[in-house]
Length: 107
Image 1 (cartoon, helix red, strand yellow):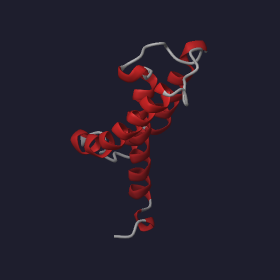
Image 2: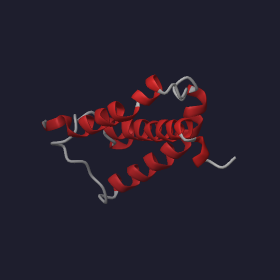
Image 3: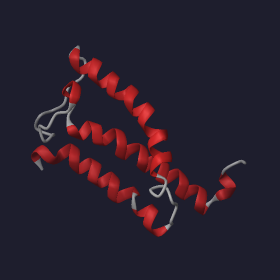
Image 4: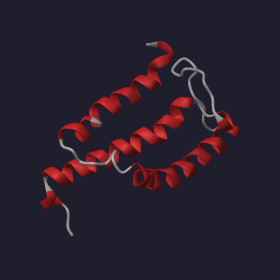
């Protein structure tokens, strides 16, 4: 798998959760603005945390597991994708559970 390890994990997450949008029609991906407003502030905090940790050598990425494409703050592309894909997968999962079992959620 080589340099595609991190990307493969992200692809697995997409395959494992994004089908909920298609088959259960939860409508999460139709509300892009709302989704981004939910995700981007937290992603910004974690990107800043990553940037700090990388700059101070507290955190690093195994170059054998990543593509080698880096964005701002010397953070790998896969890490930026992580901060978008994982929260979207979480929201999709929560909305799918809510659709299938609304009684689990108190209103």
